[in-house]
Image (cartoon, rainbow, N blue to C red):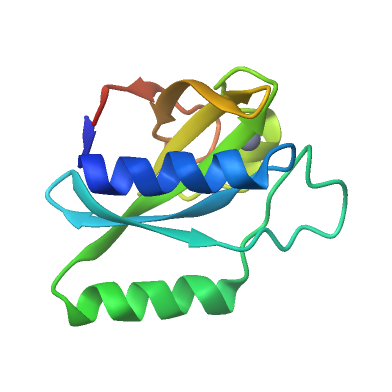
Length: 135
Ligand SMILES: [Zn+2]
């Protein structure tokens, strides 16, 4: 289960509504399964960003360092699916880390529609849905 505070959730939704119709992304920071802070990051994918996202490892390391400095951890990654449902794609699975939660936000016509969270298994064969509580 992953819980997201209202402040973090609002940051996530407003970021991915802004990046629409491209995929928006970022990192979720907190502790004990509670996301206290969302950090939007640039999508650096060089192909069509309507279809995929990539985050710069330098950005990830910076956020990780800053989180640790505050006694927090990176709990997961969020990204949007513009005009598409909040499923976890095969490509998402291939690029995932097993110890992270992956929150996918479905944005339809520029507005938040629904979301789901996934937790990839260790060999990245499957990513079962986990309970997501936000707001
Ligand atoms: Zn995706």
